Image (cartoon, rainbow over all chains, first blue to last red; front, top):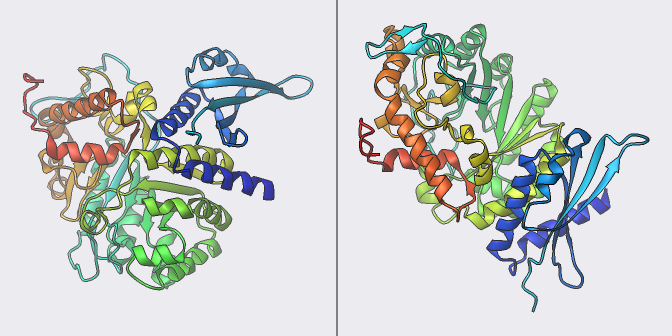
Length: 108
Length: 362
């Protein structure tokens, strides 16, 4: 629970960063809107990058029946990477998908 | 049924299907602007001492009329609804007619016996909350407002009444947003509605410097979408602004159903989704403050059994749809502003656009 609170606060801090450009925020929300369009449920968003945050990872869930939608998601130009983890043993019924949106902060 | 120029409806068949959203078709009622508070962000400038109120019989006659056209939810606002003398009568009749009753309240007047009786006719009550105690009391212009609201919430919990919270989003919300979501969830709320501040009424003068710009809306959109998932299904999170991409994908969310669409008696409530009865009894489309150029009628008309909606469909629908269409294409063309507070935009445009009765110049 504590860890969850921490990453929520981290996300707030990241979004509040005065050095983050409007264009970066626009890119984040555009990706989220596209994911929603393809029925991805956004589970978690966290920043990545050391020492400076480079961007965020959006983790979402997608039903196994919607696997064909991944093809469309790969086309999102703003994404730096996608990782897919099938969930469910022995037969996966859900996909845990992690979308990397990057290079948002002006370093300096 | 289709509307014709004579103001009647015939059973002509629809020629095509349209992707309407399911769900509530809402009559948003402001029976009085009397309130026990004078909040800084109030779009209707409600305040104590305003005596005028609508007659319950006129309201219920209109509800009966509108029910036949598919409207199925009554949402009472104000002013503070619990100060409206006819509230119990209206909600009881509305329930009998098959409406879902929703009430938006400041939650401060729920401890009386009368209020407890009225609550029985309410399906969902939405309590307004502005943040933590300090911010809430400041926005409400009354110290102790937060504590009294909490007492009201305690009444709802004791009665096991379904309730939600409505938050007016201002830039100052950011610092309290996470806590607000946690608080609403901890209280057992079924809904948290986040509505960006609209600069109408008292808000236009007292909150003019508190505009929620795009940058801010982006942050709330990103955080809000995460919180939506986090609290689902215990608490539904509703953000009252849309991403442009979602509007482009689903134009019907902006009440646009393609070129040449014409509503008829069967589709009127589905196409419009919301109509508003203001404190004068005027019925306007979509949102409070809509220009009277698009006036649907007055609830007195249904009292006199005139065919308000049919007349509207025959004479004014085209003008309204032109407004909806132009607003949709304004959103399409505006690549800069991704996040759209559609109700605010459409109300603003209803006053701005110099529309003609004819489509010739469009």
